[in-house]
Length: 172
Image (cartoon, rainbow, N blue to C red; front, side):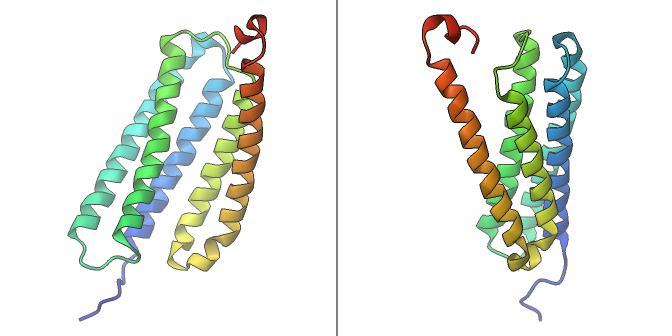
């Protein structure tokens, strides 16, 4: 009887979930770059990708609950799958709200934030196959941390522009 897992099902499922995330961020980038009247079909496609993410998350949880031995802590697998799903949920919500409220233009910095999100999702997808050897993931973590710092800078600049006197605030 083996106590170490042989299969790659969790790595494969997490890689699929992260690949789905890349697809979603690409759609979000597309949505941010088009005119308001062109957003609804993109938002619908993003909704379909989010539903695929829900299916993958469900499959990961079913596998997790039916596996005696996992390649790393169950809680870590569950948290990783849930966070990927959360990001998909947030993107779908943002896309839906931009359509629902007929947002004429996105706030300053949105395109930069979406570009950074795209890069983070690409790094996440690239890192997933390396989870079997965690030491292989370090370069991905480092770059994602640098991107997170850049997001903080962009978000901070956006927040400062929205907190200026009333005439400028209406743009945010």
